[in-house]
Image (cartoon, rainbow, N blue to C red; front, side, top):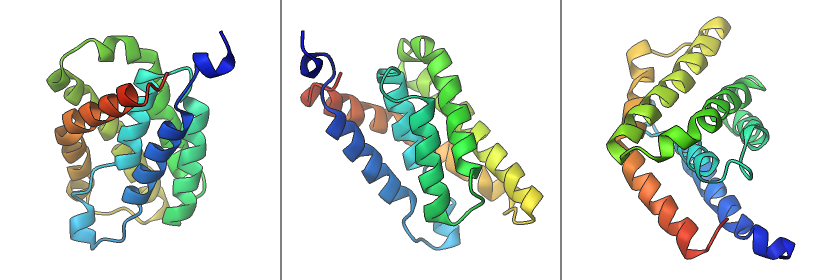
Length: 163
């Protein structure tokens, strides 16, 4: 078995992460931005659940650093939180994958709440904290759209035979 037979579709993983990154940095008004799901986090969670040997904490750290630069935040803020959430995801990925989508959405809600609350805490330390309740909208929106993201990404993975 050659290297190409063992792991294929790296370009599909990269393309989906780039699209999620672009969606994450869309310039939107603050009121609309609060309702935007965490696209990059959701796609990274999907890949770390589906292929934990290919998308792990290191990839999450690098994506978080890129997000820090693109969002002009404290360097390492998103890197730390993304790495933490993906670490938890990889630790629990076998349990998360076997449950129905509605139960996965609850897990995604918890992961996104961890992501949002740690980011809120870091921004609070900097003196930049937004309204607390507005910061909690995005995790709920992310959990609501998780089934659609999961099904889309699973179909993408199967169509392009990413393994």
